[in-house]
Image 1 (cartoon, rainbow, N blue to C red):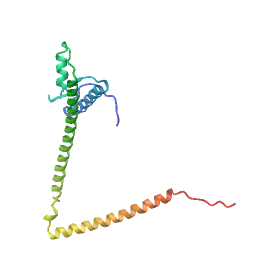
Image 2 (tube, helix red, strand yellow):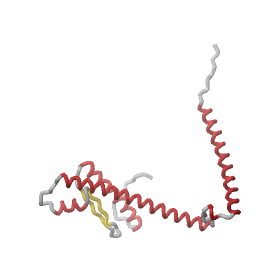
Image 3 (spheres, rainbow, N blue to C red):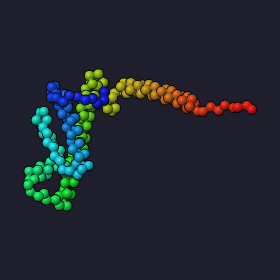
Image 4 (cartoon, one colour):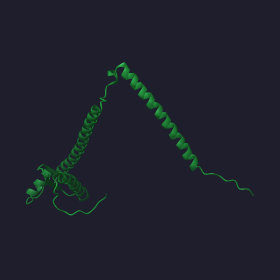
Length: 179
């Protein structure tokens, strides 16, 4: 569908509002990170979700920027040690963000696995380990595997033939000219 201009007003549906918040929060944090990286600024953003959950982003970190803001009348103490600490904090925050992404993906995959298992149980084909199968089930599985093997072999033959024909059709033909 692509990007399109939307009218900026409160999203009425609470589910849509939560999705919009999550996407826009990520975008704002990404822009803040870019600003910090490109311009070398210190930045902090604190937002509360529609559900009241707090989210924050800070470079080098929220606490450092908040303290600096609260003590802005005083001269900031910048030393090599605090610069290293702020870089370390920024790296730690980036690693935490990556960890959260990985954990979110892991959670998604676990849920997906649970749904697949439920679907297989409903279908009546609960997976078993090969050692748990009886002789009839093993024979049935062997037959199914042999049938699959033959289908695959036929498909491979078809693909090889198609590939050969495709190569032959692309090969330039030479015409003999008689003088």
